Length: 530
Image (cartoon, rainbow, N blue to C red; front, side, top):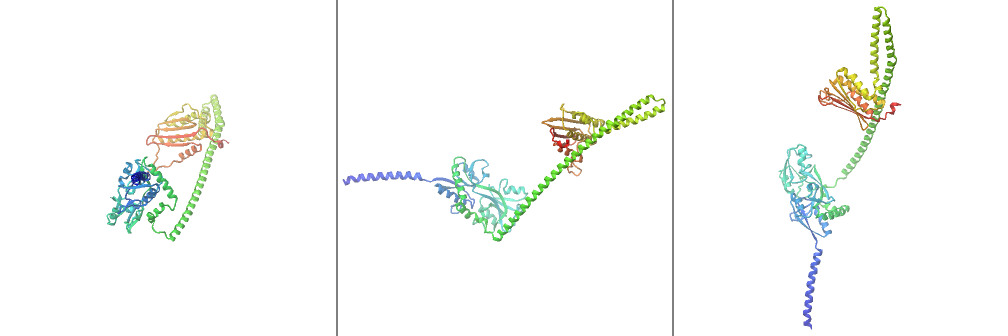
């Protein structure tokens, strides 16, 4: 029985062993870590491979912490920085640390949402070279990394040198070790590296940072578009969590690799000085804000005073026009009529005169009366033209243009399209006086033979343009400087501003002059009619 049981026992053991192997294989596959391929390149102390082929730096510390949490198996893939984005795009690596947006201009990859840190380029030189600004690089040789954002691009050092017109020779290098050797051997006068590189052991004590900073960039993790976005979502969540915890691996690694770039602790006297300067700066800022407030307040007061002066000036002009009109009516209704009646009486006496001597005397008196009547009518028109009050505005403009231009052999064209202009009397007076000044200027200075006046109303805006074919305005003085408006044009601008409108004058060379006046048809001029 025992011998019979032995084979059965062996078979049972064999079957159990096979089942154990199968179960073990199943369990092993179930808990196998997910392999994630990480591109690694030489950018110490952020990420690099040392002489023992160990991947080190701030970014690997963060990635390996996340890998432990997520049970990833990291496989580091060496990449050439110039080919890194293309390798990521084609799926040769799953993640690429140390990526910045300027690399993704062709939208070949996707970036994490949470920024890892901010980096910028720095110019390094030997101590004693006294390189402080871009201008100090004139005539020098500077080592720059090939295809690096700190060297190339719109804000790279090569472009900056062109913008500052600094003649600098740039020598390319593939890695920082090579650049430091060139600097030590005086092959170059300065090199461009990241701001944290001075933490590295190969950075000699005689190499110093200069104040020249280049092209700040925000560093992210990158992945191929779509298929590896879940990696970035996980990384974003961990980065946010790590940044929120001051005791996390993020800050521990930062202190390990980056904090030394800040140098030794600042002395207390320097901190006190900084605090004092900060206080002084705040006081100056407060004084500056107060001074700005005072200036703005005074500016508003001056603006208000100018508006009141403008209003007073226009009201004086309107008051003067009212007085002129009163005098004109007085001349017309009293003196003018009396002179006319006297002329009629003299004409009757002239018919009944018996002697030729008496007739001659009466004729002389009649001539004097005719001259007095003519002067009275002219004075009445100049004082306050009755056409302005007795005719429509368009007809008054036509009368005004003919009375000024026709006697000077200037052809007139008035275009109004039959539109009737209804303006408050104050606006009508000021606009009429403005047109008269512009027409008199044409007669005096333009040497024109043709004037076109166009009157139209569009969207309750009265637009009046006066165009001549004269010699145009002289806009520049003999010294080449632009001439300011004369008193006449300044007075016209003030009137139009008072009416809520605007005035523009243009004069292409040797092509005449066009004056454009615009005022709203609905004016608030109650103060002038009170």
